[in-house]
Length: 163
Image (cartoon, rainbow, N blue to C red; front, top):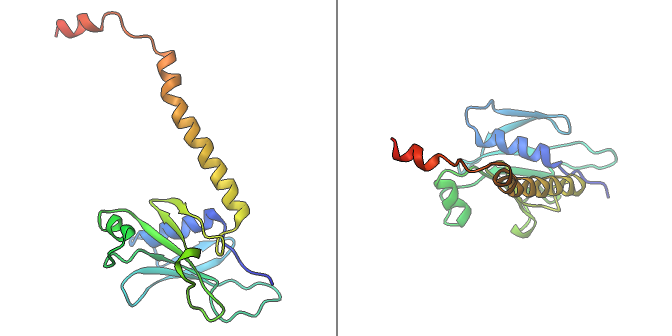
């Protein structure tokens, strides 16, 4: 059965729009078209990802991306109250109800920190994960490279004593 899964860059862009109340009340992505940002009954901004898939009759959205409810007592809610921008990726079943927590993904401060195999395209996730590892390795190597290329100043102590 065909399904629709969101590419990581689209999930990050939608999460950014949800997290910024100054943004317009819609977000447009090539893969999804224009999606409305709505406010749920609990006060959280969200996007219902509706996408027509050839050969699939579906009356409900495939997933929703929703800002963390800061009124909850969870760890993500505590981080959101402290200022973190947290958006959950919730796969929806055929009735439009979100599935239990294990299939959820999470974007925190612009980073996909939890993958949702049910809602996120895994090819794009694997590329994202590889790029993140490469960037982390480059960041870790940067101070070592910098330390090797910089010569300590021999007159640093004399500069300090003359000040």
